Length: 398
Image (cartoon, rainbow, N blue to C red; front, side, top):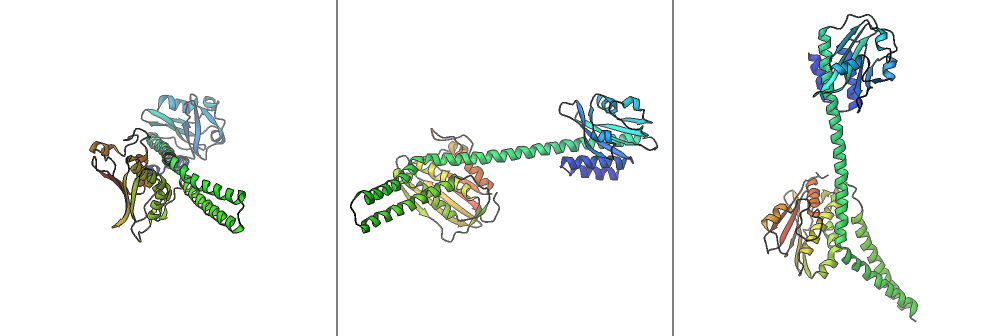
């Protein structure tokens, strides 16, 4: 019994299905003092038994695929009871077993919650004492444990596949919301790109079409060069944000992320007649984050604040250290939120606007939570809103 408990513990701790099945087959032969053993699993249609693991199995079994409704194993599946055979008669199993008669054979069904998963067998070629009732009990017990272990391993694989699919879906959702956030800035970004393009065009036309001195032409070309560099900088900022996340946390300057977001949104802030005030903490320690994901959160909050102030207003953005955390606060003078709105604000598909998916804040919340941080909102109707992101200084992100 002690050995059986050790086997059960070993099986329960192993979720690698091929290795697990081989261990079961080898333990069956060892515990029942048999020369060979085999573990056969029913296929999805329950029409065939397929060899999943074996220990010194004869070649026909090791190479074959057995009909589930025939032979000794078919009888085990049909009756859901163990079968012990002595002095095997080959005429009984001629369809699937081409080997010399064996001296003893024992098979037990692998049953779990009224469902048969397969058959576990042991046997010998050389003359040996017949299997006793205790042997049948032991193999049936081991087959039951094997059925549970196989099911656990299968469930584990399904959970892993689901988790991987969920992670892929989350990454796709984050990228989708990233593009949506940039889409909300499209008009102001187009204007920001158009300005240097127009300046470049004017400088080049002046240099080409007018009778200017070499010094004057050089002056206009230098102006065009400055505008080209400005345009390259704008495009690089956009590409950095559009690029799918690598998902790697690294030491990041939070102030620098805020400055990048404010650079992307400054045209929209100007057009919306919003006064911007910033208070960035000097010597702010770096935080270990996936930079573009946190930048996405900041951009979403800043754009939300801008859109909340339709008639203009004031926007405050500040960073500070508080103990072992770094805090970023974004405050606006918009219409504020009711208690009911605050309670639902981070729920998927909930939005206080007439347009939008209602996913921006939900995705932002998930990103911050994945970084072991928090995002909170303080607001009253008519008094604007303050969103505060708290990120730990200690490394512990995704």
